[in-house]
Image (cartoon, rainbow, N blue to C red; front, side):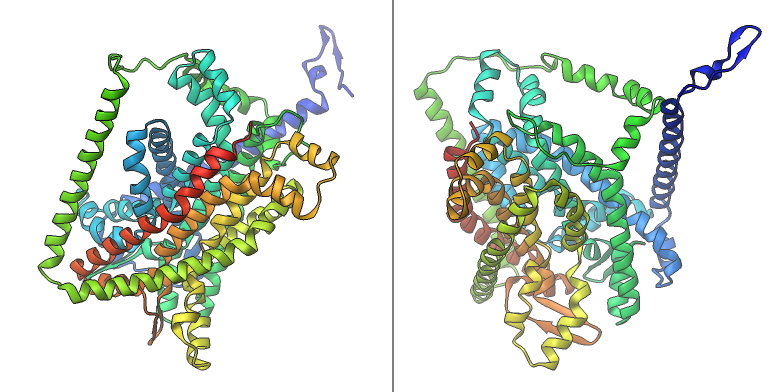
Length: 584
């Protein structure tokens, strides 16, 4: 249908109006309103971050539900700023670890340690630093909170990207080398596209997992310093302290609404966009859908504007090589290279030894050998909990993740649900757990343990979904043609395909469980205090008392146990996946 009008000069301009043009115009209006609203909210939230620090004392966190929209905006802004920083960190650090064996020797163990260090462990040493950078302003405390959220997001994303780069299909890797791709062109044309599907799912998991620690990052208590930033985390902290179940429920409902909004507005369009980077040789059956992605595609003016904005990025991506200064190429023999490797190992070992000596001196001023033996015993107790919980979570969520990942329609339906479950803070369950343990006289050493895996089990589910969703269509078709069923299909198709992703999920879930132990092993509900025997409770108690020596000792022992566990369990699995389970 075409609208057509005649006048003395011929066809009227309205003759060019078609239903498609009208729909495009309405799509432009809707998209403009959505983007303008988002810009206003971001500017308002950014303005609030720079207010004087004294205003936090004058207007403390209130449990009036009318403040929840403002608190939700402030929390969301912190989380997305941390997500942006995590992406930059991932692209730089994970790429460096995957490409350089010498860098890998430092980066991978460092990530093992950092992902297990509790958020309160970072806050203990960073709050004062950031507050001194911005004296008298909320910006210092905001930076401390954003950094704490960053530590709950970055390590998982870095491990995901690193795993993808180490398991590139060997035929594509060989093609890029034969065509003489520069490091930049190889990153843009091969490594980044191949890693995007898994990275997107881990971005979602990182966002959801960081909700678990929002309470600790917004309601900061270190020694005699207590600061509550406006946000959902502070709301929940105040509600729990006042034993206000109604306010806790309001906070959880608001969190669910926020997750649903950013899933539909941010993550769902990215999942649809990332689907084009799936590695397969046949067309995929069902493609994910997003109403916002379709809306943007129906616009005309907005797509032109995005094209202008994105032109510099396209030009940068099309460069054959980024004009960065390069070191001169020096030919060295294999013997010299071995000696350089030995020298590098010695240098790294020397730096680690000096660090250990300095930490030991700092701790030895206040503590003795009996304290060390006590902390080691607590660390082994927490290690046993982590190992058992990861095994149980793997048994449950690997089959579920494969089932969801192979069904895009169900993936679309369950995506916001799994994000909400992953984001559900353990603190919210403190009332239920406290009443059950006290009322039924249960052993806290056993029944507080599930709180450790409550938020971290979803790392396994999200990574397995990501692995199952990118299984090549031709592989699925061949398995169907050969009639693979039951255990044979699991052994020859599903488990090999998702195994590299599972290892990443289990590794980050393990580190996250160590991190969560600081919340799970010490539960407070009003005047009721429950504590399990473990390293998390030890660090939580030391942090509350401002005992930096015991905080340092707890983190040091935790780091040693995490490295030992990762090196003996997860690293051999990584090596096996890299060696035997590449898609070629």
